[in-house]
Image (tube, rainbow, N blue to C red; front, side, top):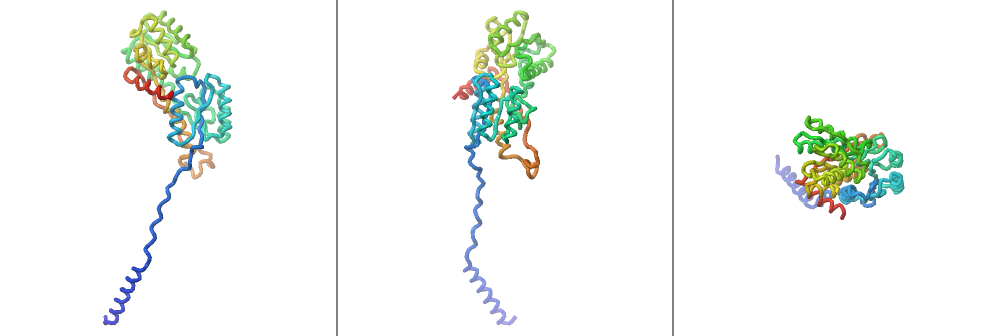
Length: 340
């Protein structure tokens, strides 16, 4: 290669480097804009219930409110203080008129089905809680498996009896929820050949009646080893009858639910224990199912609504826990928080 060619190539390289140095620096890559959910404070979810005066529902009210605070949505709890289905339906209708993002309803009676369907047809998703109404158009059910409640209680009692003894059941016969719990108790007892169920007493969901029925059963079966109650009324009635008969420690009692009067009797040794539903969490999960339906439906199709499909759970069974002297204080302390 002659000197002229080398000189020209060198000159071109120098010019190229000089031009590169003068070129403006490349623009920085744009900063990604974070995806932010829209404000949801005006997105309302309503819990429709009955018997709101009962301590049992304090945990539900707390869990519903607690969930709303964490999800950043508005929550309301409505319904009559007593067991009044017409008043509950009226509260349900008023809730529908508010056009909320979702409704959870205590599925206590089939008479609520038309109102559930009315809400769904208006575009409002509905979840049943505590009791289910699967014949309705509800999105899902969140709550305890009633059979499991009885079974867990039955297993604990059977073990505490050493697998033998005569047991009486206090219930509200003819009501499916309580019949299912009774079936669970019986299934647990069937695993222990030494345990005999000697009768079922109808408390009619009344404490005075429950005490009277339990006293009669104690009289008729002097060697009775234990009572079980399918609700808190039966448990309290049995414990009171045992106290008045002077048989505390001799006759065991397992109740249902975590009302403070039940817990106090566990603490003082009158009650052996009680079966606790996952109540505060139950309300939270009902809210979460509704929230996820509105905001995070998995893409089963390219357009779930147009395809007419639903995603997500149909039944969410919450945990069953047993309360005895070892953990009762934790539940008593929580009951105080639920009233604040």
